Length: 60
Image (cartoon, rainbow, N blue to C red):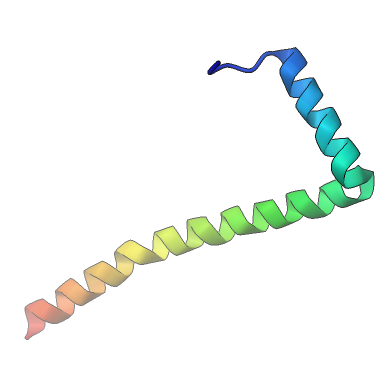
């Protein structure tokens, strides 16, 4: 049950197309892409904030 074949993927894509329609799918993909981009940016900023705290603690 772990792997999807070509037939399963085509069925899933057909269902998504029927549910959302052709006009809505690009908007959904754009939102998904921007969400992933924001997540990556936030995860890159997190370690730098920790390092900043460590350097401030060392100075004290």
